[in-house]
Image (cartoon, rainbow, N blue to C red; front, top):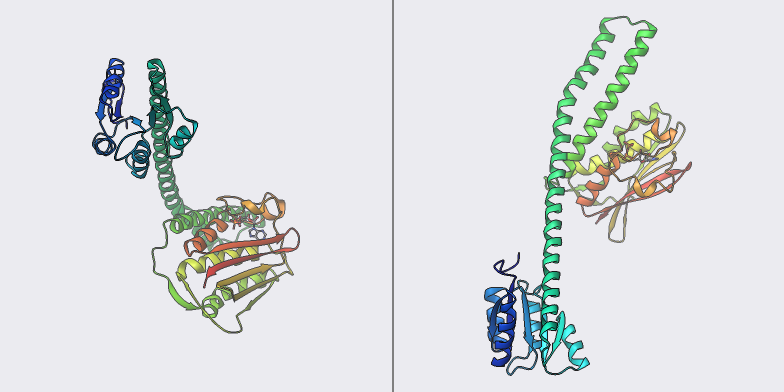
Length: 373
Ligand code: ADP
């Protein structure tokens, strides 16, 4: 905030000529400014550090430490570097002015002084300074507001998710019991299936929302060193049944020479699971899914390739966005929340890696998790 809110602002005048100091002090204090003066470079710097003025009028030609050097020192000081410096000099030389701007001055006033000119320049630069403060203050307010909104949104998402999870589990449990205890008519079974599908969709959306919150909370656990084959094998096996049910070939090709990776197992397995779950979901019957792990240059590459629907080129840049789903019938026919890829990217980024995608519509996709080796 401005150093002095009293009067119109505080101006520090640094000049080795007492008559100039007196003249400028009288002129500017008559206009309502608070004036402080220093009769040389070093005392000027010291005073600037003590009072942090709103503007500095700085003579160039001074013994011991000239105005350029004072200005350079002011600009080196994080507390003082934003204070506008207007140079004053007897030399009205273009090179003088250029040097003044180069060392960080905002303006230049030539001696002998034109009083109205001084007032106009001082007022303009103070006005600019207030405006910059105002913009900075608004930005700060916006940043805080945004941060609060995000916190509120996370809290809301988490509370709502927890509160919805239990009733949805009750619905699914009730359906299970109903099927066990009653012989449903074909029509009744159709309705129950409808309810079940709806409840399952809500349940998986809630699970994904809670996963996002869990993942975005950061890596809480310490990374572990694991053999890549031992890490990936059980994850792939977990999808065998789902793949078989859809008549998909699922193959894991471990590296010819096993190597270690350093990951938080619960997190990284979730990332690979999401990729595999998508591969199974978006690959029509008869297709093929392959998982590989390789070391290349300084990177570990974990790849999931499928011969599925592929992703249209215009959708590719967005698939990591929260809730983004490709708006094609075949994609939307599959249950999903649009959060799976957000989770993958967040986890991989937290491991200092990146996710690469190659995809051709109608031909298939390859997702690669690239981690530093
Ligand atoms: P969803 O829950 O909808 O699967 P994701 O965030 O996991 O959400 O993926 C975003 C979108 O990217 C999906 O809706 C889907 O359209 C597309 N997508 C992701 N993986 C694949 C894939 N292997 N093949 C085709 N499309 C995919």
